[in-house]
Amino acid sequence: MKKLQEKKFGNGDIKKVKELNVEENVDCQINKKKKIFYLFIEIIVLLLVVLVFSTVFAMIHGAKNTIANGLSIKNIDISKLTYEEARKKIEDILDIELKADIDLKYNDYLYTMKSDEISLRYDISDVLDEAYGIGRNQNIIKNNYSLIFTSFLKKNIDYSLVYNEQELDKVIEHIAASVPGLTIQYSYYIENDELIINPGTNGVQVNKEELKNKIINNILNRDAKEISKNKENVIIEIPCENVLADKIDVDKIYSEIHSEPKNASYTEATDTTEFVIYPDVDGIDFAISIDEAKNIVSQEGLTEYVIPLNRKKADIQIKDIGIEAFPYTISTFPTKYDASNVNRSKNLEIAASKINGTVLLPGEKFSFNAVVGERTVADGYKDAKIYADGQVVDGLAGGICQISSTLYNAVLRANLQIDERYNHTFTTSYVQPGRDATVVYGVKDFKFTNNRNYPIKIGANVANGVAEFTIYGFKEENEYDVKILPVTTETTPFTVKNVVDPTIPAGSSYVLQNGASGCRVTTYKEVWLNGAVISKEVISNDVYKPMTKIIKMGPPIQ
View (cartoon, rainbow, N blue to C red):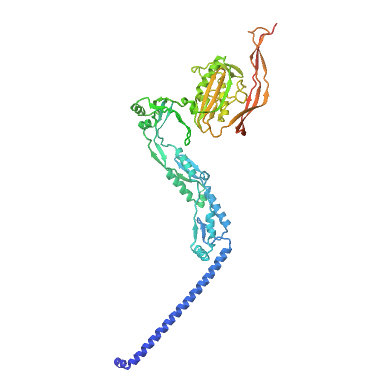
């Protein structure tokens, strides 16, 4: 049967079938293209609808003054809040985190670190600007994308509290030096002609880097809810480790203190270099051998070890540098004294000789008591008149206040910095009230500082009834003239006291002590440059008591 059917189709019939198949394929392709076209049209329409919708959505958001939905700052939801509402909400929470203290603890030691110690603060303006700016970009496509992204996927913006690292380091250094039981390394110092060595002790040492990391970690991870819930300060254990003290190294100490004496010297100024003075330096050496020193420090149980030293003075000391190194006379001031008073004159000479030749480098301080030293019989001082208990009496080293007062005036004229000065109880005969400077060893001192740019040298001379100080130096660009102007604002008359003395003839009398009026004095310093006053200041307000006049009288005539 199949064969019969096949025979019915000839070549022409087969051709017709092929043509029919081709027509069907063409129709299918046309239908596919139509479907793709319609799908494309639908996509275009859908995109247009989405674009229109999102544009309207973006425009509506842009017209509002609220932050986009789905936004938070450090997990604090600020969706749909205004800029200021969001700021207040975050700041209320941040204030809780900001005010939280930290308890830093090691055994019984406790240090509470407050936020203001490290200038802990926050600044959320940038993150608020970022949050508020989402959906408000000039590019509407980016706006649409940002709004859709944050709305569905959420977005959290983080920030950190800000602290001052240098202040945090200071807190840590304080703690590292305060924790009990610290390791103490051996130390030493020189006192007079002895080397004093203090042995070290074993103990603990704070791991400062680890402690710093713990504090920073606490700051960065604070949570207001946890802080409010717990109420108590966070406790951070101070990390410490056991550290052994170094053994005393005598060889090392010797290498650090041993020195040869160095002579004082100076270099003259040139076109390219400044005038420089190099002070003398004492040479230092052990007075015993290094092995003997090692035997001393090997003894156990001692709190200090003492090693004797030898000092060797330089051949040329700073006071030996000639006046040629100080070519300019900065100031001079003389006072008169009674040369016939041998004891008082001797005291003036001794005190002045100890000051004569003193050189002060820029910034160096002068102390009268330190330079002159204690006034003793061994130094040659004699008894002479002094003020004591409201009277003039004999006392050791009487008269040297004239030396301190004379120097004071030379220093004032040199426009040097006065650090310490006291006026006498009573007025003096050798300088005006307001221009004196009294000294009492261990009680009252006269001090000043060389505030010039170059070293100065003090020259002193006491002879033929004149005590004079001259201050030498190197001429500077501006040299000032100084005028000292004491003004008496009040005067108090002295009283007279009659004392009956049965040892003198009846009806006779003599003045035991002359009287002197008291006064209040304000002293001004005027500084002149090129013939004009550039400054005027009060340098002292002094009060002088009246000195009672004492008259000795014999018994009345019977």
